[in-house]
Image (cartoon, rainbow, N blue to C red; front, side):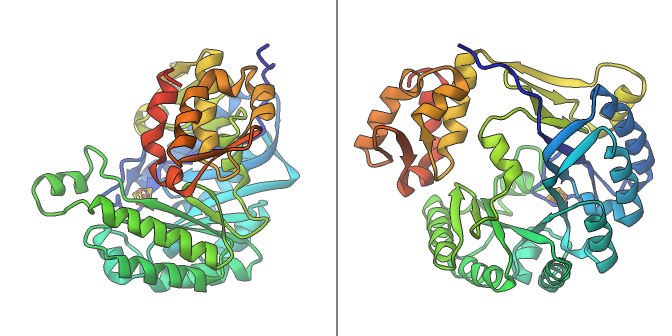
Length: 382
Ligand code: SF4
């Protein structure tokens, strides 16, 4: 039986503005177009009318782009728009992404006043040379100051780190990890740099000016990350995410549980349990369509129950907790072994997963290889 659709209790709001576009970034955003803030607010107010009744929320996530780039006045405006259609419950987790150089005492106080509980800081590195090579516009001291300001205001802090940056050595990653641990933050997300088509970095790579890190070095960097953060008391709870006990990102956990979520803004993707709908990716295109009452949908991805269950395997196994067979059946209406039985047997034989009969988990080797494992499940050869 297919479980009934539940109303979403998580919302993502996309803020598509940055001061500058980093050379590796292909997100939906406009750099240096602060003149469009007002039009964005008008369009956001319009899109929020999609919600017929106020939504009670367990998690709200403001991402981007750089929400902190709106500044205190812009953030006040945005929170006032969200207030009404979105009603975070008393214990809700409200996260806001920020550029370290935007964080000030007044901004932290304002965010806290609007219920923000958690900041996600786009630090990427605490090494000046790595920040330069990543084309970032902040310094290591900006990261330290921002973290101290936010922790001092009683907010929880997550730091994003990028590894395999151009020219970065394993020793530089190890130093970054020590520096991040010394910040005293509650959560760290670590991603390998990806070279997206159409970015400045990709063009420089094609010209031979930048080079991609060797796969074996990238793997050594990721293993060092797991070892060092675990030794410092962080729980490695998802391929790229590490948390001190009690500080997992509840918003991302809703995604990984394939619970329904709502999303607003350009390029924002929402999921009702059966269909993923992505808004028009261009910021100006989304604004024009919303404000002129046109369809602002970019993509629609309707999934059969079996396709949704296959996706549930992939996102579920990226988590260290893995997948519980009973929970999987209750949530998807299908048996895990019908969807991925053959793949699980093969992974266990190859040392990539463990299976105690109830729960299947990837081993460290499986997690390191995980992106290479999914094709078999997603194409129905599980
Ligand atoms: S600050 Fe973040 S979102 Fe903005 S351009 Fe840089 S990487 Fe992209």
